[in-house]
Image (tube, rainbow, N blue to C red; front, side, top):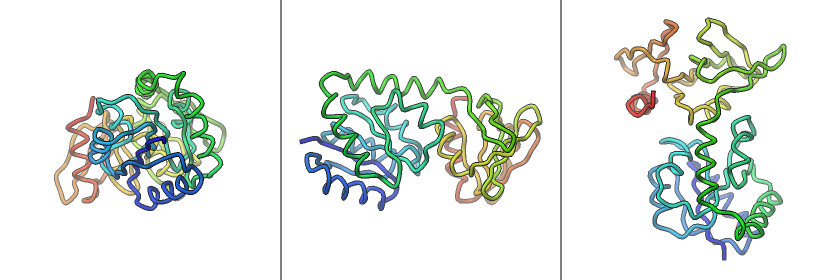
Length: 247
């Protein structure tokens, strides 16, 4: 029997995946579920696990935080995410596999069959190590604009602002680029790279924060002189990320 742990911050997502596993993959037993980095670490440390179904964006951090903090590396990681974007494609070669929401039962079956056929040949410890190293190596992002695709160094991005179903990127050169994807997509893509969603309409690069202005939620002043409001709901998350920011 394959032992599995599901970590997803949405109860519906965990329930759906478990139901599909119960129906189509009867050789998989879910030994634990978790909804956050904190509870996920406990689940991984305390329960048997051959396969970890891991959502990337969690309420208190990212799935990568769990992989970086756990002492265990004897399991395979299958990402479960709602967005088929550039970051996931970049991670794919070093992650065991990934599934897109809504989950296609055939893809899930295929992932489990892949696990069964490859478990004796592959080394989970090396796989997780490569995954974490690859996360750190991603330097550029492809931005699909109306006149083509721009390839931009992530370090050059100061902030991203939602404009309906589009996102405007503000760069350190003073240039801005209107991109044909939503801010929600870039939130999941960049949050593991020292970005923080401080407001419904704003995602900022913590490396470009120069000042924090106190207030109800407060505001941040960025390296280009722009001032961005921090919502009350996001204030604690922002301040925590600033304290722990590698920059």
